[in-house]
Length: 374
View 1: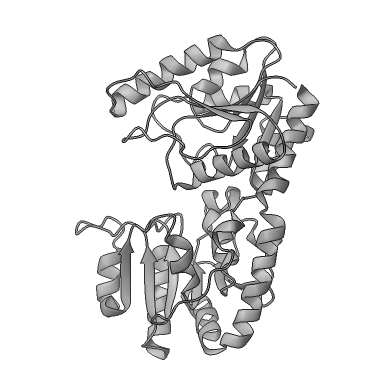
View 2: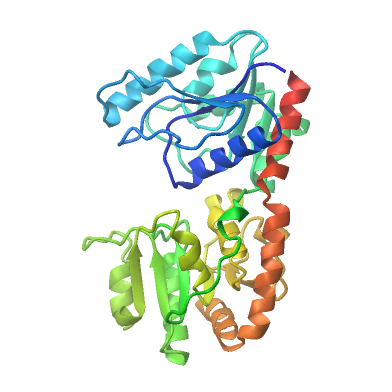
């Protein structure tokens, strides 16, 4: 097989994009495929992957970069992207997992095959220095495209990319992190993990729903797991909590390590994702949902994007209408008041996650495309 390169902007431990890449790396390794993972720029503390994967090597293009900040890293991304592209030879296969100017540097390299993954609509995270319109014109040149949703598949087809080149690769989760976990004694709480984002994850809608739950079940807490908003909270969620009179029942845990996250999710009575309808919800898929399901706890989630394609209300999850606190809170209350029935739904949801979001199955889709190109 040809030389395979998996290209990333930088290594950012314990983030959804990096965890997804590492799930593919693990899959490549376990399926016997040799590859080199290339990181163009460092993160703020110059992290490197500390785990060994047979058949996988890691290359840090930035290793001789002795000083870095946002501006330096941007220049380094351009330089090291150019340097990497120049090193490619006919027959090489490049798997682009990132979204940057490296795309333009490799797409026109003669004899080089390029496969590309996108888990968000390109308009969601457009950024200065990247020509999104040029990207939309040239993405049809890729030899293979991996997307995370049906809407994203339709979108790339609309840009002129042949539909037979586009493969849906589902969200991936590491089920090993949850094997053998037991609930520990704790207060009863509903949990959400992630940034306190309103546009993406509807944390403001979750707070409104919880305020309704609080009136019925005042002993239940809401844990928001992630970075605690500062006093100048732009989201307005701290003020919302105060105005709804639930300040004593909402707990901001702060950032929780990857090692600690499974247990704090496992200890919850219910897990919640009140995601609103948006371009991001339509085209993306929330990684946290897979981790929620693997806890075997009941999950309350909104009916947005591809979520209803995997989960059925009352059987594998509790699915509510988006931006509807009355509906969402009624699902939370039911799960809290009917723990035995809710537990059955949680266990059924975990089976869905292990079947549909299995990293080996999803990595094999990528490998099969690469093998056809080699």
